[in-house]
Structure formats: C-alpha cells, structure tokens
Amino acid sequence: MNLDLEKIDDAILALLQLCLHDGDRVWKTFDWDAMNRLHAKGLISEPVGKAKSVALTERGMAESTRLLVQLFGSGNGK
Image 1: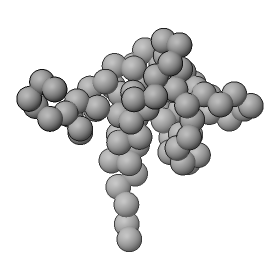
Image 2: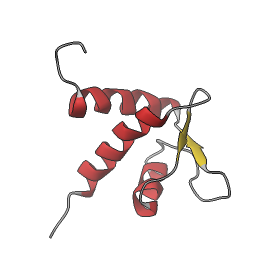
Image 3: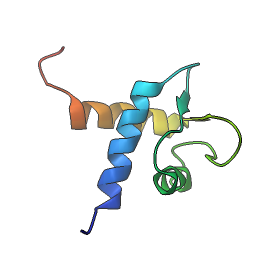
C-alpha cells in the first residue's frame, strides 16, 4: 500500500499537541522516521538522544494546534 507521508506527518504533529507538558515538550513515542521528518521540517527539536521527549518549535506549536483542530475538531465547540 502506498501511504501519503505528508498526511501521516500532519496527523502525528496534531497528536503531539495532546502530549504537551512543560510548555513545549512532547513525548516522542511515534515512528522514528516520522519524527525525523518533523525535525527536518523544523517543527520539533532533535529526536535522537536519551531524552524521552522533544520540544515543539514555535512554528511546530502553531502548526500542531492548527492541525489538531483541522483533523480532529468536532466543530461544535466541545
């Protein structure tokens, strides 16, 4: 099956918004290739290392919020 990696990256970035802690930190529990792509796009800090979390960049934070609403928002304000 051919998968659209852009759509996968968008969904993962949106879901990272649900894992926020300490301001801009998120747990890095998603596919390593996807996390590397998000880093290459400048949306998260370096995912390789001993830390169990990464930081969303300012752009990553804004984009993850937008995508969370776009992809998973119910539209009824709840």
